[in-house]
Length: 118
Length: 194
Image (cartoon, rainbow over all chains, first blue to last red; front, side, top):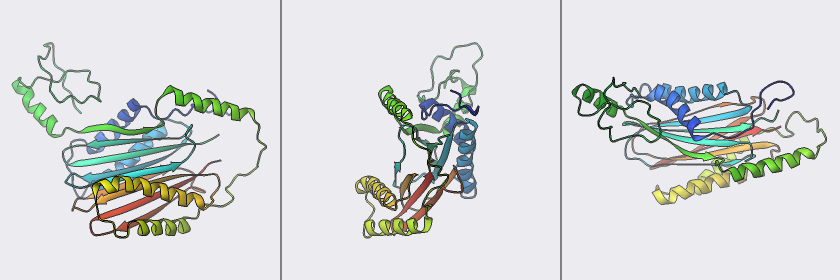
């Protein structure tokens, strides 16, 4: 639907699973795919993944503010818990969490999208 | 992941570990063909797996309709223009940081790492921090709280966050609580909503 100013504003629908999978394939697989956990590069990779996610989301051109949080952990016997709570408008804002793993690393990326009311 | 197209011959058996998530357009080469074996082995070694852990709001049609009804009802009430371009009370990161650090310290004072306890302790902490931040009374702000517990077993972990928001009014706060066996990290994001 068209907003009077002429910018296309889509009704916030949240993320669907296919879109999330696509994003993960492009962003995470592109950076970490086929790589083994490496102390020198892990910093760059984490930053790279999160930035790629954000650029992908921005390219979708929706009226949202985004927060992307990523954690890359070396695979070993460890425990990891994460919880989120939020205070927002549940009709227009949403989140999605994706977990990616390979032989040597685990990666968890969390995306929050808050609608901007134009 | 790279897929090689089989020319002509239909492959008799497919590789057993099919990831249900990715739609495969081309069939993987069979394990029994010699040339393909090396390639499959290589693929298997780099094999990565991903899945979507959690999505909110859920995709039930019923919930979507409720939201829309409420919203259209709201649109019919015309609110008077408040002419307010900025928040009355800007988000003060330092006071929130001390409060969150205090909550973390109190709740995790002598708590040892334990799987079952931590899974609902993390939820409880997230809710508690959210209540505390709301009590500050920053009007028209939306909050997101993230709580992470990482067990210290000598592995490496990297956490990064990036965001797109209004730099003038939106901000974030971080608090860390470290003990011998684990590290607890709390992140609070505050976004101004017009």
